[in-house]
Image (cartoon, rainbow, N blue to C red):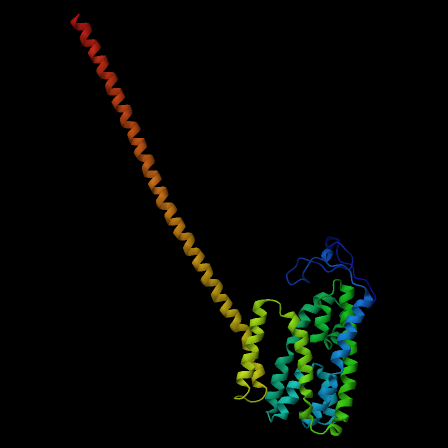
Length: 315
């Protein structure tokens, strides 16, 4: 991970992220100064340690939900996405159908696939490394990687965050599962809310636009409204409908405003056309008036000439 990536000359600074293609990293590289490796490592370790320790909560919750020590540890080793793991064991603990619980966890974790589409361009890792790196594509590693100003910093942030989280999460999952019996009633501790709380703390600063905030709020309302009436795991699935609903309403609002603007332009065009017709009519009137004046002048000249001829004959 110590290599320095050099981009084509058109991007300017070696190691800088290219600015321009759709879906690019955002501001131009020259506007984002290099970040020291030590600062990137410090930020990555802070996130990795803080979130990795919440694996203890998952271990306790999973064991309290009836999963064995082996099942709990295998979930953390192979699934390794905290929100989906909590959703799965929470649905099972609530008496939900295992298939419904698994479907809810799957669709909740599919967001990582969209993270991967973005990170694959940003990190540009060798093909042999990508399958292993894909296992570390989660909320926290994405949140640390995306803001980095260079590809080198992005790779360091991703690697340190992913490694720290993976090791700590699995160790604390084991400790939590082993100590679940000593804690007694795990529901009384509220440990199942630890990981979702950390996830929300990381997500909240990323909701910058009004559309993002409205979508998140609508998803929360849908989930809380449907929670008492639907089986466990289903409200999480249906809360995803918030995104297409908001996009649909936005499209209709833009279409209405565009139609109103087009109507105003047409009205202005009609009034302009009416004015042009009036102007053309006035021009035609002026032309006819000029022709009549010329005709009268010719007639006057003819009359004068005729009178002169009559005078000469009379003399």
